Image (cartoon, rainbow, N blue to C red; front, side, top):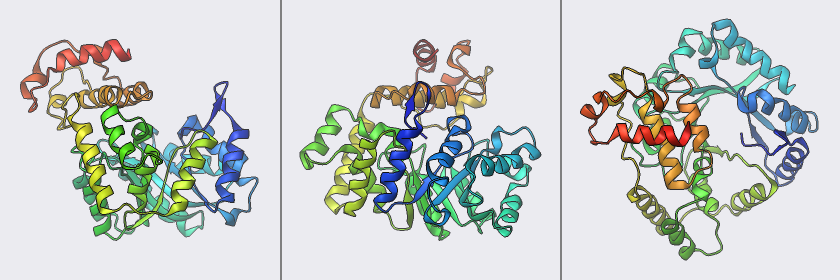
Length: 355
């Protein structure tokens, strides 16, 4: 994700430089997916990594997004497509992609749990697991049903650690309870934690004027017991250099530093935002099928972090058509909202901003 771009294409020469620096510094885990950059991420992995380094010198991970497939055959063909695109021969870590909410059932319906076991027996997968975006209770259900997975990939960062929608801490604890190694994704929350508002940013700067905001977020994730590796989507050499310097230091957070990040997160949560807790009550009775919590997530990212990716978040959340402009102002959502949000007004604002 977030590879360097040039003229709307992946800048493969810069990717090669990034791969070379990464490998030279002693790091060797590369994460891609069938759907990243419309599949071009996997072909970039072939050109920049697989074709240029011995196969046993790196680990390559990719992912199968069954929720994008219209049939079992199409879902299983995604695996073969990824093998062809990457030219890797096998995958060190293979993930069933983005389980949670209304997506998990596809992996059962298409018999993909048995499929990845078969591919592991054939030697085409060394380790298989899944990435997950949902509440801890749902994660526990998946782990109970598939306790033989080799690892779990979770969204973990200091902002989401106690977030009621993400439940990062609870998900982490669930994976630990099943003794599963954890791969951390979104340690800097898609780049949001390197663009903090003035107040929270000042707290970190006063504590350590030399430390970048990204280093605080990475150290939080790197210091958690049971973490196999921490992923970071980097778009240029400067970002990579900064991240590598943080990882090289191996410096865990002190007790006081962890308390400081808790304070930063609390201050972030106190800033003006739509107080949506993602309970979903508003969605169940919406006659237009509007994905209200997802729209509010994009709105909050935009207001709290000045997030340039908020538009992308909005488009992803409304990918099935539940856009804000479909609101007919029936008021059903506002009647059931425990937070008493003026949903109709907020949806009108979202439509104006994102559509």
